[in-house]
Length: 380
Image 1 (cartoon, rainbow, N blue to C red):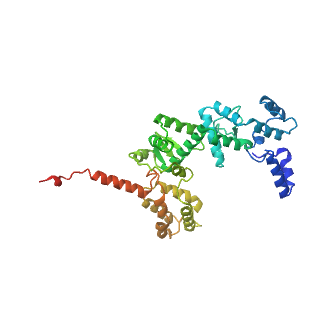
Image 2: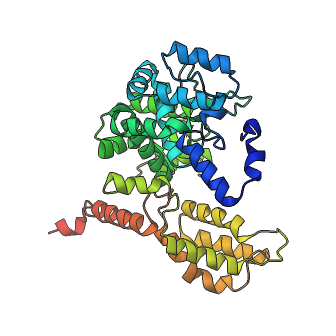
Image 3: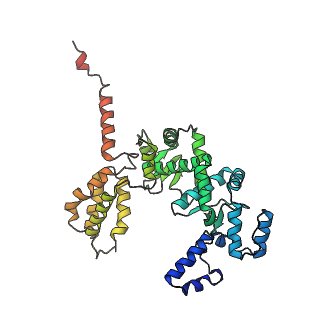
């Protein structure tokens, strides 16, 4: 979406690197950022000079008469968007709009696009760009006021802060558990946010996220269960794995939020070691044209589904037989892959590692066994 603003590209191409840097620095000091897709110059590029003058006048903005179009747009947005304007506009927003606005800011900090069907007519805090036929578009906060808007959200508006945090905890819980119930999400919000939610509240929240952020959410809803997009179980198996489930509960909210961006929850050194092993193990001339990069996510995701390491080993050995992996994998996988599996928090075990879950089952077995009455102990 970068446009050629009045010959800007031609002008810059004729400058030395030092002259270009000085020119861009001067432009940025004036708030003019034409090479950013979310610059107000791009977002309101369809307006004429007359349109912008009328906007300024209608919002009691002065001091624009001698400005060119681009300068006038920057002046307009920077003069308009004050803390009082942000507060007033947020107060007019529906619940859906507030969440979409908050998440637009959150995702922009992560350098990720936020895509939604929510619109903000007559509001200059959020713009809809790159509209698709399905009614979705990328939401953008103008670059010239993004810092100011962010500071307001993060320092002044506790409600918007709470919305972002709740969404983040929800996203982390989905990455951690893979398959869980509304009741468990209810427990998560109580534990980490100290929120009391009815199951109806949970259902409304999950549906709202699905409605507002269909392209950004990391889950789907199946018969009342929250299911990670990466989970590959058959739907008729869900009930079995949800029955009598034990969910891993990290100690603090910071520990829970670790899983927001760490789906495989592996330390960097373990991930690098696994990728190095995989790169050495893939046959470069295999008939499937498979590469280590392609197999990486596939194998790690498979490990998050595996009930035992034997399942992982079987897959690796079948890839050896198919000529994808080298024969030495039959000797090296126990030392290189099994430790990765044992450290991963498994979706089938609801966030526990294999060892942790086996210990829980062992304790339950012992507990249940203690209830058994041996008739021989009561014979005279």
